[in-house]
Amino acid sequence: MSGDFDLTMDELRVVARYVVRHAEDVLPVFEQAVPDDSRPSAALDAAWAFINGANRTKLQRVTSLDAHRAARSAPSEVARLAARSAGDAASAAYLHPIAQASQVGHILRASASVARIGELEAGGAPAIGDALLERSRLCATPVLIDVLCRYPPTTSGSSRLARLMSTLDHSLRQAADRSPGHTSGSGADARRRDCKS
Image (spheres, rainbow, N blue to C red):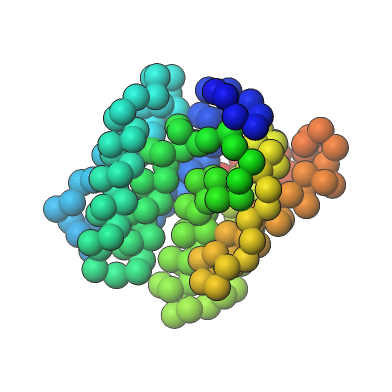
């Protein structure tokens, strides 16, 4: 793809896998709120098709847009965040290789949404969000971090979701700075095995 740097299909699949696993964690929140709306689930299916080797097609674009429409009509913040995460999973196949911080949202917004949903379900407890961000940090592979570091850092916005995303972005970039070549020790490898495979 033409742009400010290169992104391979394999790298896009790594990003999509990271996003889809977070979106899957919170899909039940949406399905409980809107049991008859299958649009977010369809977006996750489209994301997995791409992850598993299918060419990216309009399927990922269409299901992503549909999931985002489902988010707009969802009855609660947690349901909206869950549906939007599914849309982000499908759209990860089309992450743009342009050096704009806005692109970071396509990589990390689902992770931040999981943390925010956890907080809201726990009565607004920030410690829950912090713990879920740490889990997301440990699940990030060296390839994902390498792709992330090609983009400018996201800035901390006014919303809690934006601040959570900025915190995760910062911690992943710090991990890259501390690990030349993005290699990880056996302890980090063991923690990553605790993430969904």
